[in-house]
Image (cartoon, rainbow, N blue to C red; front, side, top):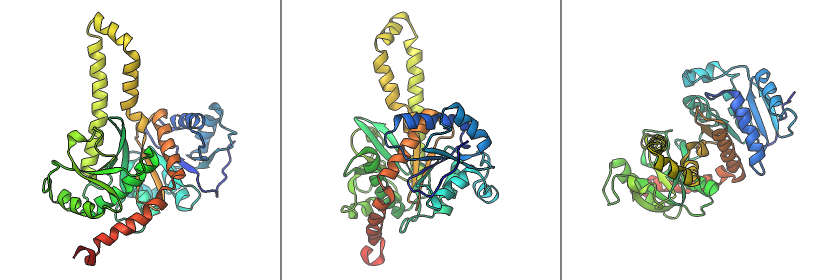
Length: 353
């Protein structure tokens, strides 16, 4: 039987009951993470212990010193309305995992569950950090010769310029922690790189980001065709645009994989060539596979919240655990707070005048 031991910071709390594939896939992801991630912080699985304990025993993790269980009798389903679930299901795995972070018994919560409930729960329970008006979702996306951070990937579709300024800071620090880039180049998503292109949001944000040059490394506006080239390391946009971009990329990656398979099976010569090129095709598949980038953190809160896809398999959940661990090691929130307060001075009436 796995027992619960709490109190230390640096723990990763996982909502084990969220997600389409169920708690068995979460347990297998934890097993992968323990084998693959050096210096992995302790993990608490939050969920029905009558379900989780047999799964841990079967996975050989029942006596693992860095894995324990916190019992939760309820589950927030994908069909639950976010606020209703938070009020009525206080003993749910998602709510109790968030509470662990709020009570400083864990440093980060990871969930594949209901996105709206996780975002609402994180925002209402943990609150935004001082100076941040709206949290933002960040996603790591592959590009030429590496990766970039997309922010906001869907948390705030009705953003204001000051929200995008904060996004630039949040994304820059997350990029430094996750991708190891000391001074990441920030680009503002727009429909042109010339002054005055775009709508009022991008125009006002562009002016604000230029004035924040001592806080972020702003490269200027970028267009869609530049996103996957090696132009910038952080792409800033509102949550509506970011969510469309992210899902389009994921869909396009799957589309090309399907079409390539169909074409290679078209005749014997192509099939023979495919066999000879199998290593290259596998490398390409691994590079663009969304499962490698399994988690998007909700940045700007007083605690760390990381959202994985509802359909995440063990590989994607393991990737989310890896991102959660890096967030803890990088002490992300403390890095952000000072720069947000400096940036907010640009928003004051005296500075704007």
